[in-house]
Amino acid sequence: MKKIVAVFDGSKFSDSTLQYAIRMGLQHNATITGVFAERMELAYAGGGGRSNRDGCSLFESACQDAGISYNVKRGSDAVTQSILRESRYADMLLLDASETMNPFTEEVPTPFVRDILANAKCPVLLLPRHFNNIRKICWLYDGSPVSIFAFKMFSYILPVFNALSFNVITVQAAYHEQQLPHEGMVKELTAMHAPQAHFVSLRGQPEVEIPGYLREHAPESLVILGAYQRNALSMLFRPSMADVLVREQQWPLFIAHNK
Figure (spheres, rainbow, N blue to C red):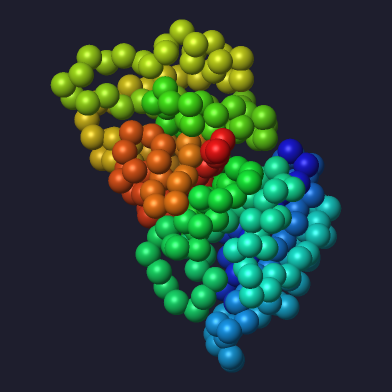
């Protein structure tokens, strides 16, 4: 990975996004492009948030202190389109899950975040409110093409994480016989990228079992997910489970689609 785009609301600067960007830039010797977007008609007039100028200064100082190559780009009224255009020429986009690009608090995932995830032209790392060190990788696998594509993109873009503790998680309904979809092929693929991977099979409702497992066994994990579509996270198991992961804002979520 050579180019990371980190998205910042010019009026509500995300320290979490900055910390993850610096860490990713150092780990992958990548250039970080900080995109500072602020819808002019909603800009704060003497509000309590940091100004666009202050946010840019913090970003530049952090990159300089870390010795990371960086660029700064300022958005316009067409915030979403500007970010999507940047995503065409990036390896990965970093985005705080609570970003709104307006002065209001909205339910996570916000409409702005949903729009970016549905239309981004590169994988997105959706970030929690607070920075945590990544000590484990959890791939949510159901045998679908989108979940496999997400794992491959993760392995290509973030190879330094393949050496971490790695869990492949599946969920079967309580009344179904436990069976790993396409077992031979997925184990062969996983062994080539993360030979230390451990396969975890859960039983029950995915939207209950997966968050519970992550809270108890993998609090400092990065979670790999499949495709995001316009109205729901259409990926593993059921969209409601995926939305739960986004709303909890506890884990970085690596989201990729191949549409």
